Image (tube, rainbow, N blue to C red):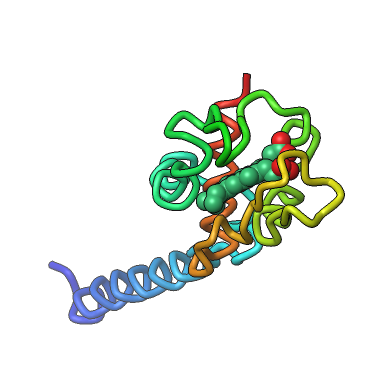
Length: 134
Ligand code: HEC
C-alpha cells in the first residue's frame, strides 16, 4: 500500500512539471516583428487594390499608361532601375512638370494625389507594380 507521503508527492511533482512547462513556453514565445521588417516587403494583393484607388486613373488599370495622363509603368527603364525603397521615395515626392527629369510635361502628383497613403501602403503598391513588369 502506498504511503501517505507518496500520495502527496505525486500531485506536487505533476504541478511543478506543469508550471515549469508553462515557463518554458513563455520563454519560447517569439517577440513581435519590428516595424522595419514589415516595411521591407510589400504585399502585392493589398497593393493592387490601393493602386486601383490611387494610381489607375492615370496609369491605367493594367499600369500600361493612359496617353496624356500617366506613363506606362510596366516597361519603363526608370521603374526597373529603382530599388523598391527608391520607388517608395519617388512616389511620395512625385515628379512635377517643372522637374527637368519630367518627360511628358504632365505632373505626377506626390502620392498620386492621395496624401493619406502610408509608406507601408506605398510599399504594397510597389510590390504590385513589380508583378506587372515586362
Ligand atoms: C494625376 C495623374 C497621376 C496619378 C494619379 C499618378 N500618376 Fe504616376 N505619373 C503621372 C505622370 C504624368 C507621370 C509622368 C511624369 C513624367 O513625364 O516624367 C507619372 C510617372 C510615374 C512614375 C515614373 C515612371 C517613369 O517611367 O518615369 C511612377 C513610378 C509613377 N508615376 C507611379 C505612380 C503611382 C504608384 C501612383 C499611385 C500612388 C501614381 N503614379 C499616380 C501621373 C499620375
